Length: 115
Image (tube, rainbow, N blue to C red; front, side):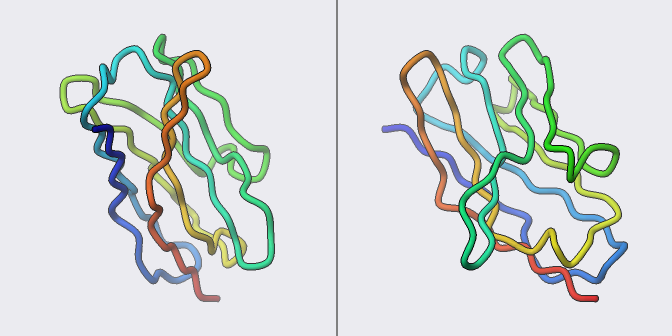
């Protein structure tokens, strides 16, 4: 059974840093492209950052220069380092894993940034 479990969310002030983790199990982690998405209240889920199995990264324009995605295949974990947090970063952050047509999602972790 595949599981993606996000952790590290919380309540932060603008300008703070936070690191999210997503621990994967039940899959061959190194094969999967991994991503972080977020969904704010009343808005659609949006891409934050992705890292491919070849460690190529991609970021939403809104987080470029502030967020860094990375993966540790030995730990089956993907990270999202978030710096210079802004109130508009407030959302539930979801981890996903993609391999071809196969996609798995975590249940999310709440990040709240106060001004």
